[in-house]
Length: 231
Ligand SMILES: NC(=O)c1ccc[n+]([C@@H]2O[C@H](COP(=O)([O-])OP(=O)(O)OC[C@H]3O[C@@H](n4cnc5c(N)ncnc54)[C@H](OP(=O)(O)O)[C@@H]3O)[C@@H](O)[C@H]2O)c1
Image (tube, rainbow, N blue to C red):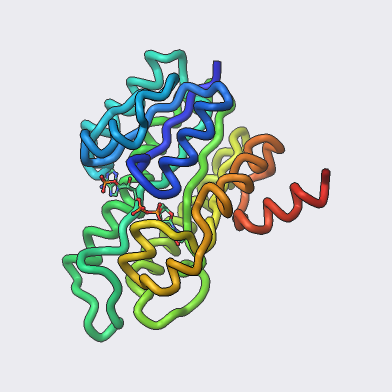
């Protein structure tokens, strides 16, 4: 029985990825800060284990890993929960430092803390780490500099972790633009033109798991195209 943790599953990409894994028979430990929203999003589906809380809280991170342990171990950690930072996007000249500090807490330090907490279980199972990043980590867009900096930092430690832990795949994946609450808050027009995460990102992420690709940076779109070509 395979066990996964998926953070930020009360909506958007985390929700549909968690449900897809449960559908495939995984036991899936999920979180999100709002207990009601999380319960509603998971809709009483089997094999879903909701542990509401904030990933920046170390006690909550311990609760996530303990729940996985009680289910038999941990085979996959998906660091998906993320925020744009405070009120949203800002030019570098006007970037609120407190807002950016909070975004670093959620997007960089919390996933790192969760990896540290989960590593003993992942090493024991030969499990994998999947960190959700963004093209803003590697491309320069006006007003995306603060958020992009958090994702660049996430990518930096993901690469080091991959080098330090040759026994476990560490993947950092750009899911592509998706019509989710996060993107709608940043750019409603562009979000409306973007696909839903279940259409665009989830197939590539599932292919990554199925193929157990080597550690590295991937795009969900590229993975889906390669999967299609291999059929
Ligand atoms: N949408 C895009 O176009 C896009 C593009 C590139 C990368 N991404 C990345 O993809 C991932 C998913 O984004 P999304 O678009 O699905 O965002 P979303 O719809 O805003 O969902 C974010 C999820 O994270 C949870 N979350 C936020 N802060 C949290 C915290 N401190 N503790 C626990 N859970 C927290 C939210 O629940 P609560 O608010 O209830 O806590 C929610 O379930 C993020 O890492 C994002 O940076 C998105």
